[in-house]
Length: 444
Image (cartoon, rainbow, N blue to C red; front, side):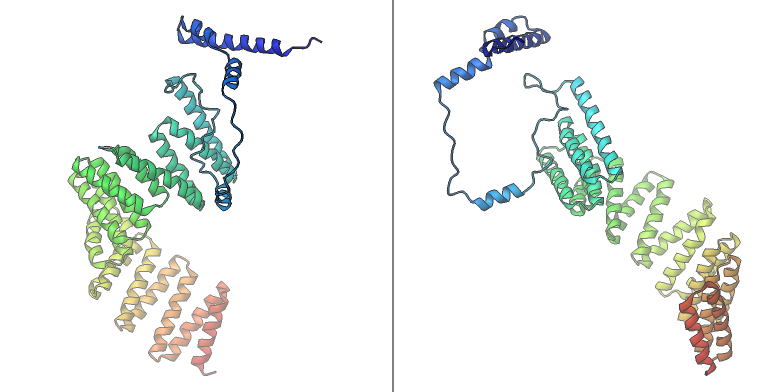
């Protein structure tokens, strides 16, 4: 077997590199480039010459003044996965420093999208750590493809990090979004569409202060430009953010602005949507005086459209608000209307709810006779829907009202009816409670 000598291998290596350079010169279309490249010394020749002229310095020993504990801390701190600089196989390696060509960007994007699919597949299998390793590689490559793609991907991956309670990942991704925002804010004027994407990324990771501050800036800009589409988008995001954090006052401001915007466009569908949101906000925020006019307007719209099935629950909520502001008569009338309409539409759940609210109202007004009549009607409604638990509870309420009035025989009879139903339901605690009440009232 022939043995290659070192000189022979060097010659072969040199010939191989000359062939490569010649091919590159031909690809670049530079006829004279090959002659220039031929005259350049080889890597081995250059290294040999430099070694002869400049001797290599000896290794530098660590300075005694260095703090070992700081070095240990540095070693313990994991690197930021978004700032890793190792070459990626998906990135082209051009001979000269130049922007990527459209074809290179196309193939890079294909590779990055494949990484996204790989990460999502790992995540679906429950391999969350492996998924994030791939996602971070995707995010590093997205940076090469431009800020728009990077910001969108940061928001997408950041939302998963928040959902999985991965605090370090959430912090790293949020910090990168903040860095991009600061760079954009330093430009006059900034890219507002990119800032909107950044705000949406903050929102996905529930970074409320960052998101709200940026949304407020974007809202001011959209109004200055009279861009109603962006204004609507930003107000919707602000409303949802404040609702998610149970800040009903600020949520109401956002949806009131949205309602006014829809009215200025005569957009009836959006008006209805925003009225429903405001009714919900005022109800949850316990603001009855502000909820009533919104609910009244909603009632008119439901009747006009018509949307009859939505009226009973709205009337019950309206009755609750009348009661909250001390308008007991209006509350009673509204509950009765809700019951009548729900019963006619066979919405027995709302029928029962309206009667319960009406009975509670009468009890609060110290009108036990009226409350008894309502509970007796409730039993009939619960029987229509075969709600044994509801019937049992109605008998319990009737027994308590009779007991409070000193009507012992009627109270015992009602408790016995409730006891029978509790036994059917195998409801041990209620069986014990009703048995004890019957024994007490019977004097045994």
